[in-house]
Length: 130
Image (cartoon, rainbow, N blue to C red; front, side, top):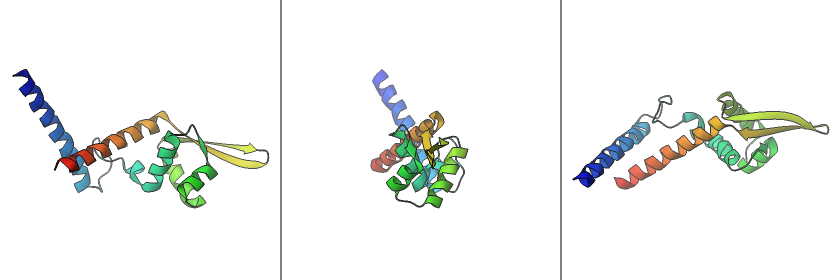
């Protein structure tokens, strides 16, 4: 009887998670609230920045630009948005006379990426189960 009850509780929990994930798909214009997709990270280039920094200790502006195949202006705008959200930190210095901008992922950024990936995995699983 205990096994049956535990299985029932697990099915209920999966159903709740699936409902939250599907609600996020149905209402994508809503602001981020618990259970919804983090709109800040969800944008393609920002997701690329955060993902690249998650697997590297730090990357320079030029390394990110080459890796993501984007323009200076596009990268700087998206990096600034992530910086304002405290997902990344930017350190500016000089290498001789050449300016050097280096980015690192913060603990908050790493947590946000982990939440985002968990949410995407739940969406994928919910889609496969239907």
